Image 1: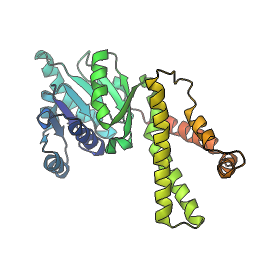
Image 2: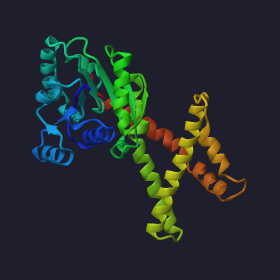
Image 3: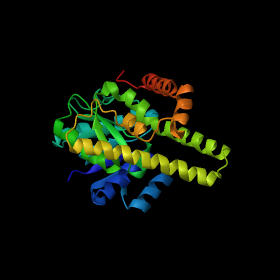
Length: 287
């Protein structure tokens, strides 16, 4: 089994590490590079994983996962590229995976040895609890088999799908920023419930469990359609489920009417568009 190096021991790096271990990966096949000594000791103590320098971690790894801050990408990739150039002579096949927000595949391909397979991944915050969704985009030199292998790796922290890199800014605006939209809606729902006379504890439990249960209903419907090989390209499950719980002239209809009057759809569209635009502005390219 190919060794996996995780470069960066921040929250996402730790989420990937924990997910891989939960999925049955052996600790001997994992190595982490973390420049902060306190953080490195924490990871070593909690997961019994070997902590090494960037060069040491990347040297013997079949998969090199870069999970650092965008500002650190240049120096980290330079160190990896130096190791990768030596590995070329040893016929070590390495796949480079980046979860660094806003850093393009071209950035890596222009710095790593020619022909290096690079796969860019956009995971989201729920990956921290194994319930995330990761969008994968393959570079020019990544094979279908390598993309499949990386997809399997990231299934340890949630669902996985593949998109062209050109769509990753939109992915960022939806799934990357989406948890914050969700938390804001829950916050607003709790505040409204408190204003209606419920205690904050009861309001929070009701709101959170309602959101979790509603998501479970939608996931169950989509899973059933996939199992039945139904084309979900034109699926309208959210609208159908909304209609199912909305009685004509009832309480839900009254509440939905106010949400529509308040412009909830246009506000969501504007939020996604703004987040996508900002993601494009922050992008680090090969130049």
